[in-house]
Length: 239
Image (cartoon, rainbow, N blue to C red; front, side, top):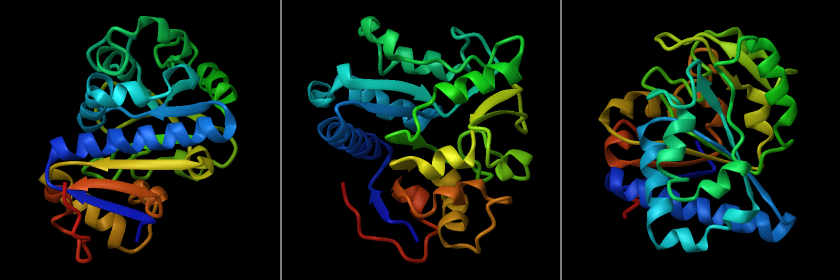
């Protein structure tokens, strides 16, 4: 099982709990090392967390000026595209904080030479990252590491070009070593549609090629009750 599994009542409570945890982890990193590096995730659940983090009282507690922001994956779209993880972050976490964008390192998945872009971004990533935020797909993927991809066996490159099961493609994604070496990883899952994947990842036989999210099985997870409904061993988390 995981090192930490928190089950909350619903998606709203998840966003709040995740935002609180991000504040805790980033403040701890800054206190210990003077700065913090965070890799952001895409998707609706992280987006809701970013909205809470940016607009609630928690915003005052986040050490904005000491954080460098990166991305765990990105689709092959321009930064203003509706499918862009960078755009989602700008519309939520950094809305009204444009001065901070100089500390936000966009993954250039729309570059002409994607292989070169992947190498450059991998070289720019802090080693290790202080915090990696991740979601989980209904197929058990995380970041843009989908079941069966050769990237799951990558041990040298830190960012690679991948093709997902649905457009827009291609994508850039961090690789297993980046996730494994991160000081902290926080996985978020919300909704009944994720219940089967969460149960298989956390309690099923280990097979990271079939269920890439098992790469973070032993890390911290925050899930809502709908996403946790398939778990056999569920903590009585309440929020």
